[in-house]
Image (cartoon, rainbow, N blue to C red; front, side):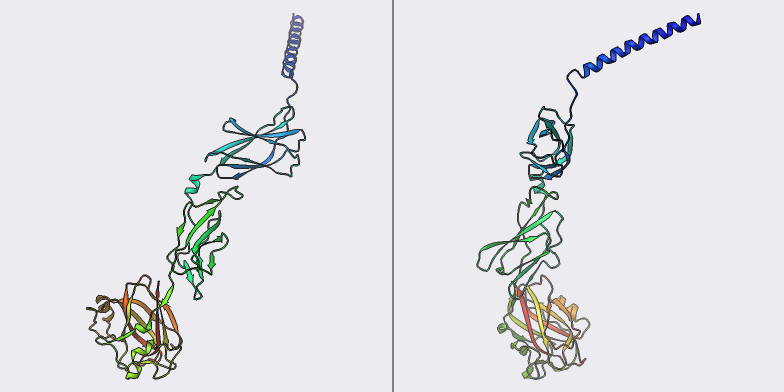
Length: 404
């Protein structure tokens, strides 16, 4: 009985194997009934090039010599572009520019085709951002150097200073009026932080507009929509010394003699002068103060230069004060009183500069006054100390400049 069961089992297994092999063979033949599927070689290394409502796809061609064209598809394969295969050298680059796109993020698929219409496996290029007006509208002009936005040189040339730009900045157009009264443009390169303009017309506005690329190697450059105006550029104009007049207020210092009056400070002398071509105080005490009238109101006094005597008694510590109207401006305290400063402020005087010199006080010493000063017509100089430490003070010349 055991042998009979064994023979029966073997017979059943053998029959099953015959049936199984016959079925698989039929299915394989059905699978190959239209011939073997052929996949042409796919493209190599696709690189995106950002653009304005367009994009670029750069890729290395497949070395497969059977390929006759490439097809790029997007929008779920509803849009496509055909590119003929002109090379099969994988070291070459095929450049495809796809126009008329929306400002959106796309996925592109690249296929290779041979002459029989066989198609390669797809090469997807996801997250391809296309740029447009929304991107452009968010761009800002390159910032200027807020600490020193410009330097207006004595020869009339203008140096504009900018801060370090974003890495995608490609340039900034500077628009200005030149000395011939014509609108002119120059370009500040992204690698530069300043630009020199030799033919700037003083007192006119300067505008600037920057350009950017979204990504390195982009197809298109995007300019900021509007120009920005550079901070107001002032030229320094020397105050007219012919208008200066002496003023004497209560407790002002006296002069050594009439020949060494305050008016010596605006007689036009150049360099340290000797006695008696100087202002020379009477030496009664330090600190002391002297006052003079500029002859007109200046709305933006910006700089002052003080020149000492050729030998001695030169101020090395002093204050410059200003006011526009002397009505009720008289101080009652002497300048050496500790309360003088507070009283001066209460009377409407503005401290324009505290000056400390570290030299012998002889040479011309130019300094900036406070930014955005009030209108000023009258100047007071409060001398706190001299190089020699005496009660006398001597000066040769004082010059002031106004921004306009």
